Each structure stands twice: as structure tokens, then as C-alpha cells.
Length: 410
Ligand code: HAM
Image (cartoon, rainbow, N blue to C red):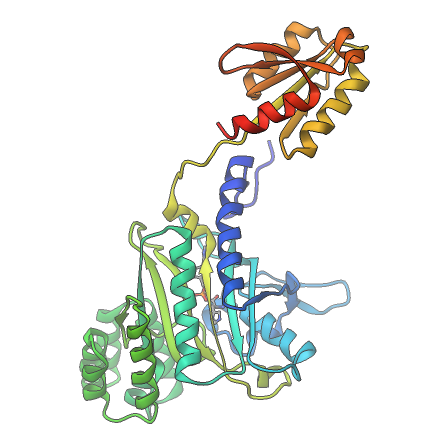
């Protein structure tokens, strides 16, 4: 028996209904903030991602050569594609642009619960604003979106300038290693590494930075930084909006394009793969031939959100089964149409089997069965049986539709 590829999943109808419900909520919440949906190709030129997304993601990419010999990659994330699209299509549009997307990404990772090779992100990119309120808007939206999914989460916010200040003057290769250790929260390994580099003092400062819990403490460790007023104003706006978060000045983010504010969301009931959202301020457009436009965004790991939600009881949809004799078949199709036009999920029997067998099947999959025999084929009436109570009636078609509609969901 052939199996699906490692790290991918199949979604059965119940799974898809649960996913679509959450997806719709996310879209609707983003719409209210003015974020309009966009879509980009599933594959892009490899260079789009190698330019600035960082070593980690490049190693994890699905890369292939097309028949024209071009190096392509399945998208591992959607920020770079969206910024490429901005440069191609919307450079002169009035800014800020507020865009969102829901799409699948591909990363060649070691699969485990919450970590897949094909996974979906609901993301947001705000392009062309550069202020405390623009950063605050993106974080408030991230918080709202996570809230609307029903998961219990915590939000951590940092700013790269703290770390930038501490790492100023240090070789880029070492800086990169430090960021990688911090991103993976490998603090002990970080200390060992810096001691080897004879930078033990820096290890102490970085540890203190990670442990600081107020902007004041972080500024004390790093000294004055040019972005101080803006950072304080962003936190003030978030506080006034009642956003719950903690400062984490040690957030490094795995992708290399971030420049300013950075933030991450964590689900409280997940294990190792508990990061359900990540984002921040960045600059990418200039690398793709556009202007050096400031942007800020985030992506929610949709699959992790679904794992965190677990089995959530959903309203069961009402189902009508239509059964028929050979002479009732044409009328059965008309009757099914009338129920469908009323918005009711209606499944007509597709076999030539006897009425008893058809009704037995309907009772396994439907809530009502509508019986169309010789009499019903010509009378304008239908025989309808409530399969839950067993009661059966003969009604005019519109009365039957009204009765089922009134019975609502089950
Ligand atoms: P990221 O942190 O790489 O950021 O991914 C965002 C989210 O996608 C993660 O927080 C996680 O929930 C989910 N995720 C990542 N990898 C996997 C995986 N293998 N399986 C399941 N879920 C996964 C970005 O991708 C940036 N583009 C976010 C962004 C948008 N920054 C600015 N704008």
C-alpha cells in the first residue's frame, strides 16, 4: 500500500471542517483590521530565500532544478514571496499596505508532533509603516488572531537592538552563532562558546538580558540605545490596549531578516514544539530590487494551533437522505434540489437496491430520510421520516423543507 510522504498529513472531512472553521475566524479577524488576503506561488526561485532568510531555513528547503535548469524552491515561508510580490506589483500603491495570507509552506525537518514538512501558516505583512503604533498594531493583531482561535497562549516581545548593542564590534560569524544559540534557548552552550572565544563577560550580559523582565532592566544592561523612545512608546501603547505579554530581550528569531521589534507566541498546552507564532519588523524589499521599505509581520503556525485546540466539539450538520424507487427517481432529484436550495446537506441514494436497504443505509448517515416511491412521484407530497425519533409523515414538499429547516442542527 502506498503511503503519504514523511512529515505530511491527510485531512479527512471532520479534520477539514475543523480547520476551515478556525481559518475562517482568522480571515474574518484580519479583515476587521484592514488586512486583505494575497497569494503567491508555491515555488519560487531559490535565490529569493537564500538572499536573507538565514542558514537554518536554507538547509531545510525543498530545492529542485526545473526543466529549464533554473534552481527553484518550495516556499519555506511566505514573507519573502510577499515582499517580492510587493516589489513586482504594488511598489507605488499608497502605504501602508496591510496584507494577509493563508498557505502551506515546506521545510525538510525531522517530523514530530507539531513539526511537519508541509504545514500551513496564517500570516500578516504590514508594508511601509515605521512607528511605535505600526509595531503595536501588528502585535495587537497577532494577539487578537491567536485569541480568536481559542488557544491559551503567552506572548513574548523583544527588540533586536538590545542584542545588537551588546554584540556591536563582534565578528559577524560569532554574532550569528550567538543568535542561533539564543533562538534555540541553548544558554549553557552559549556560555561555553563565548568562553572559548574569550568573551565570558558577554555571556554574563546576554544571560542577564534574557532574564530581564522590564525594558528598564534591559536598558540598564545595554546602556542607551537609539530606539529607546520608540520601544517604550510601543510597550506603552500595548499596555494601554490591555495586551498581555512579557518582555524577552533575548528573542533572536531564526530568520535573518529581522531588524527591530520581534515577538513570539507560545501555546501553554504543547510540548517541545510550542511556538505557535513568530514575527517582527524587517527590511527585505530592497534585496529584491525595490525600495528599502520598513515592514512588520508575523505568521501563525496553523497546524500547531489545531493541535493545541485538540478535539473541539462542533455543531453536527443536519443531513437528509433521499431514497427512491425506479419510477420516483426523477422526482427524487427535484426533491433533493429543493432541500439543497434551502441550504440543507442532501444526499440522494445512488444505487438500484431495494427501498429497505436504502433506508437502512440512510439511517447510518442521515438524520431524516425522504422517501419517493410511485405515489410521491406524482402527488407533490413526500414521505419524510425523522430517523432520530422514528416518526414518519406525509407532507407537501415545501412543508417538509420547512419542518427540516425548523428542526435546525442536531
Ligand atoms: P517562523 O517562526 O519560521 O516565521 O514560522 C512561523 C510559525 O510557523 C512558527 O511559529 C510555527 O508555529 C510554524 N512553523 C514553523 N515551522 C513549522 C513546521 N515545520 N511545522 C509546523 N509548524 C511550523 C516565519 O515563517 C516568518 N515568515 C514570520 C514572519 C512574517 N515574520 C514577518 N512576517
